[in-house]
Length: 545
Image (cartoon, one colour):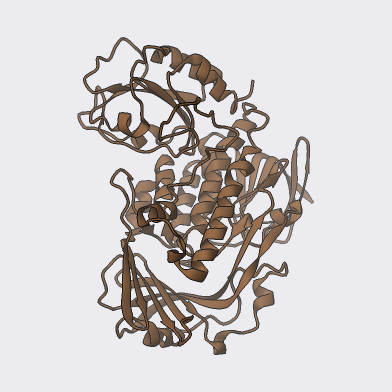
């Protein structure tokens, strides 16, 4: 067996989750290798929905422009029952949310992430499969097979399994994966249709039998290209071959694309003839497959120096396009923590917070998507705005995280530690003649301390910036936000004016405050008044001595 050296982090799996993790690690200066058993990127439009929260994370990574150039907007959903339109959902979010819903084939998402990773000096090692690993107190030894059949041994400080529903890493850790499978099989197809329906709207067309149960289903999601949709429909009996054992990959997990003969265009047309809202002919079949759906969740997201993310940790129905987006958030949560651990700058309990923060999110997503798949979104009793914010993953937060610094008793601020750091506009600088967004200031940065104003009982922005740099070994930048019209003062701290007062309103900054923004865009501390002592107490939960 050849020994192929060492790296800080070995990432198994080069789908959107593994690529996001690797790109974030490299952006933080961490060495990593990313391996994938496939010889090339699959040209399948599997996960197609890009949630607004994911676009915010891609913005932080400096990739959102490429994604927006390639994607199409999702404006809403049209619902039909037995040929009659029964409702229209408009995907409208509050105006302060910077991005809406979008659709993009998974292979395009992977292309953008892969190109970004290549610019950072790391390529995917294709036709390379992780087959076994063993960890010890100092690191992980992994065994890989390459295209020639030869084996290599890799030593890494950490290993992350982003290797899907049949994860080798999950099995090697002995994690449980409790749940079950839906009995139905489905067809996926990437086709073009020439119907005269509003552009940008998904289509959900159902047939209900005399007992009221849904016995036929068609779901279409618009994709880039004229009349192009990713269609999903129930498999007819003649195509429902006994492929369940193959789909389960020998591990009892029946989830994902099945083998065998894929559905033909004629099979898709039969469903359209029954369920399409208007007569239409499908053409330009790019890809089709039969797939199964399961719902499962691991008992923990890692053990020691080995972690799982994405489908390796949670699988569920594709309702609401939650899967890939949840996995990308897993990766963004874990990457900055691994970077601090690799740099010997992490608090001893930092890595355990990955499970503490992300497993409750996975549990909620699995439960909600199973409920929606069985009963529809109407099973969610919340109002429409809350439902859309939740589907957009903008309500994900970590208020119960061991990393956050709780507000003192009596502080009734709406924005709290553990919440997503909201965007705002109208920030003006000394040089630029146009206002910028807060997310422009956060882009491609790690931890950032945002100081607002000059609180009479707080420390100065200069003192806070100096403390932030010292306490984090130079890993935190500071930005000072001044009220509109306030004098700049003599300071070397980079600053902007809150020209429209948006920052003060959305952050509840009052007469002065400071906010610690994590690399994944969540607040770990809200300091009112902003003091060096309060900052130190907040940062010592994350950074080691």
